[in-house]
Amino acid sequence: MNLLKIEWLKIRKYTTFWVLVGLFTGLLFIWTYGLSSGVMQMGDFLKSSFAFPSIWANLGHLYSWFVIFLCVFIIISITNEFTFKTHRQNIIDGQSRFDFLHAKMFLILAISLSTTLLFILIGLIFGLINGGGNPLEGIESVLYVFLFTLNYLSFSALLAFYIRRSGLAVILLLAYFLMESILGKIINLKLNTQAGNFFPLQSSDELLPFNALKSMANMVGAGKPDLENYFYIIATCIWITIYYFILRRKIMTSDL
Image 1 (cartoon, one colour):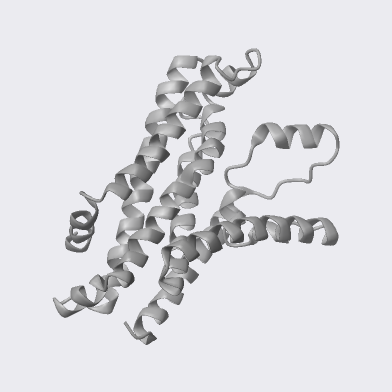
Image 2 (tube, helix red, strand yellow):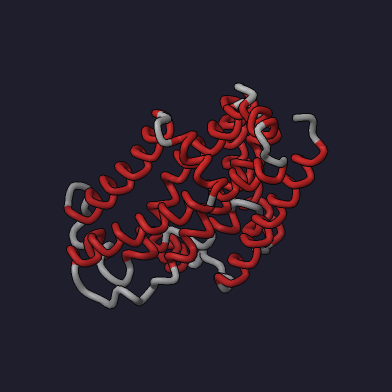
């Protein structure tokens, strides 16, 4: 808790933090409202998609669009430590190298939990407004959202610790999104497999699919049988663990 308190003291008056969190929260709420209220409505299709129980899966996919704002913040937060040498000052003041790493990991965990709670709140609000269904049905999407966020933010931290320049790290993150998506689809298509779904970020993407698109693919015979989600849960947890141990090695062997 002391490490997390130190991180909070660093960001509580940091304008970039509030802007990026505000963009994430505001855009998620506005898009959910627009899709479910009629502003961007296609008959009653979208409205029913944001009623219980389907809202959890559909809101989860919509949520995944905006996590990039949180990823950018994590990159900026970590790279600023190296740019302004505050990481050295923290260690001079008594933090160990592991404390510095764990403070960032706890910050990522806190943000992941907070945004998951936001997801639950928005889901309950719009699910009740649009009516119908059991709010507990499909609630496993809450776990998927948490793992998705934790995976993306941890991967962003990995880039930030290695690149140490915010602009370059953000560009590489965006480039990796594109590269992984294309490469995964090529592998799946050419090898007639789903191995491409187990890349670091894609493994958690598979937990929050666009269900309407999948249904259309299945209708025209272009869809493939889905793997059980627990495969992707395990893969996501493995990747998060790998990031952590890579960072442990990095923080202990690098010249701070």
